[in-house]
Structures are given as C-alpha cells and as structure tokens.
Image (cartoon, rainbow, N blue to C red; front, side):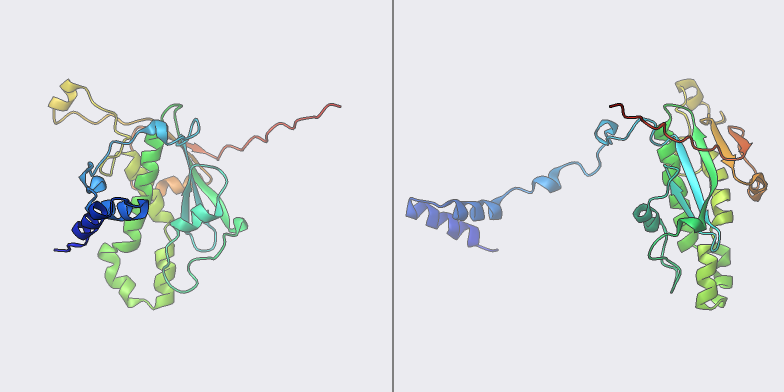
Length: 241
C-alpha cells in the first residue's frame, strides 16, 4: 500500500502552514471515487439536447452513384464531416477524403408526423446499426467475400444500396431492440401476448419508385410516394434605405 498520502498529511500537520498545492495533492490521493459511484446508466433528458424544432421528423437517405454507398442524414444537405464518419474503411481507395456532392443523390426520404422526432431519431439509430452489421457480420455471404480479392471485396462491402432499402422496411416494421416506432401499448394490450404491436405512421418518398420492390415486404404503417419533394428556397429579404 502506498503511504505517500499519509506522509503528506503528517508534513502538513507538523508545518503549521500548509500550502494550497500540498493540500490539493494530498486530497487528490485521498479523494473519494465520486465518478465511479454514480449510476452507470442515466435516463436521457431530451430537454438538455437542445435539438431544434422538428429534428428527427425527416430522415434523408443518400447514395453514391458510383459505389452505391449509403449515408443517412436528418437534413437535406449533406455535411462533409458527419457523412464521412458513416463511411467505413473497407480497403484502399474505398473511403474518400472529401465528399463530392455531384456523386451523391437522394435515394429516399422518410417523413414522420409533426412531433414524432423522437421516433425518427430512434429509426435513424437503428438504420445505422443495421448497416454496420452488414459491414461487419457477413453471414451466409462470408465464403463468397473471402473468395474475392481485396479490391472486389471492398467494392462489395461498399455497395449497401439494396441492404439499406431492406433495412428501411425492417426498421419501419418495428425491428431492432428499443425501436421507438412501436407505440407504447395499453395495459390490456400488454397483457395479451398475441396482440399486434401498434406502429407509428411513416411516409417514404422515393426518387425511383422501382426501389420499393427491392424489399420483400412492407408493413401497413408505411405509405409510399413516388418523387422526392423539392425544397423551397428561403425568401429574399429586401433592405430598405
């Protein structure tokens, strides 16, 4: 056992004029483990996040026209740093240093009702988690991917377009632990195990409505619309003299 804190305290008691530096060093050795005694898990306080109004009500899905890489965003404009964090390194020249916005186009837009931002943020999280599973857990495709060379394997792992559409159908149907698209059931419904889960309504706007057929099936709470809505330009302000 280290007796350095005890010796520091003895010197402070004998000197009669303890300095701030010595006192701070002594208390640092004898300090209680405050951080480790707190609760490990805290309930999130959404009031402290300072999200803007409507944050999470829209999920924009962008894909790369050359590599079919997919990026999710809550805004219709891609931000370089945030988008690059979502792209994994699958080999040499598979992750760009900077995004070329002429290579990225909207694939789909998921729209939730006003006030359902919490649901949208949960769906956003599940979509990113599922995509990471596709990149790391190859499943039945492992033998085929190992048989490829490094360049072909990197290109195959970057191509997440079809997987992302299938993930959209699964997550909007309630897949994923803690998915908040499932509405909280009443006590009577919770008692009945055979009662179907109630899902939040969602509208998916497609740049190409043929992509709907990529997924095997869609839940009844999803409405499909062909065409992505255009963004309205902000009105120009005229300065008066």
